[in-house]
Image (tube, rainbow, N blue to C red):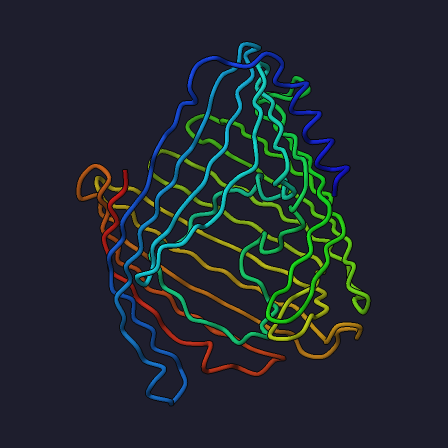
Length: 355
């Protein structure tokens, strides 16, 4: 780890060159959300039907300064209040943006593949239904991350290699050791890469994004290292946006008190949204499945499955004020058996104020 920190410090020192005499520029943003969330599970247990208030606030600070060399240095941190508790939710490493438009993330970096997700339309709102802890079918086409305790990530400028609309990213990280629900997961190192291509055809703008992520796992009993990829496309024509994406691969999965092997994971996302005046209508679909087993055991048998169908209506009440009504229907299966406690319907209504 000392070597990685020394490398990051050296790169930063060389890249920054002369220091800037002016104060760092700060940008403050945040939001306050108030709503009602209802969850009605398929289970016959009456306690599985609940309606609760949903109140959450967040506060973020972004810091940036342009140095005498023209290089920009930036960082950020965030705070969040939920359920009456105010928490520190994390901070970025340092990002250096060079005069040619390329950038370098230092120290906390390692998920370059996630920087090239396409924004497949997804229903708004806080609808959710918790699944069992052993559910390994991660939702979303990039549900798998990697080690980023000490890492570097490079992002190209636009139109890399002379190709209009093309950008790429590469990252490496090392030394991330975490304990989750009693299971120690040592991601010794990871490599990630991603690319995005944007093309305009007539009145339609098409964005294609793809990423790949490889990570080695130091857990002595684990036989499955992480190897995942995703690809997706989004088309925007005026007020209409449609998108689709897929993700697949193998990875280690943390569950309550155990570490699992997960293979043949695959996920699909579909979404469409339409803006009409102050209203935005969105519908989305997600389906994921995977096969898992205890650490050190080859996965076999029936797959875990997770399916979500959702829709929402957003109304722009005023600048920075949006009211949302959303509904979600979810089906969860563990080893091929439907889990009523992880299946059902959830709806949400609330208003978000942002600045």
